[in-house]
Image (cartoon, rainbow, N blue to C red):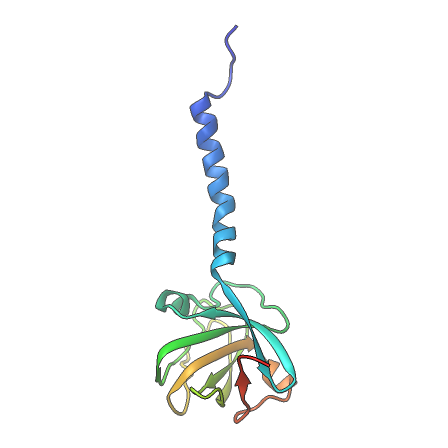
Length: 149
């Protein structure tokens, strides 16, 4: 008796497609390095982005960010690194941080805006958090961000 249905090759192709679709979010979540940062008495966990591709995408397209989560941008050299909110749906605050870990400026950024936001002097890092997070936690320019307790 002949079985009616999918050939073994067709079944294998479907399994590969299904595995691939599940693999994409898993691979993406595993590639996002998360580290703790310490600001005053606060511990936060942030995603680290350091390649040009990761920095270009940032938080674009995301619909939410955890309460005490953020994204840390690490640059190869100190410079006047600018940010905009094109395709970014979450209202954000950004802290521009010098080589030594001191916040040089904090600014608020509106979703989907093409306005450019930059630091007053060259920085090596930038930290994006939910809008108002820095002020709600009493963090201001001049405060230090530490990479360890």
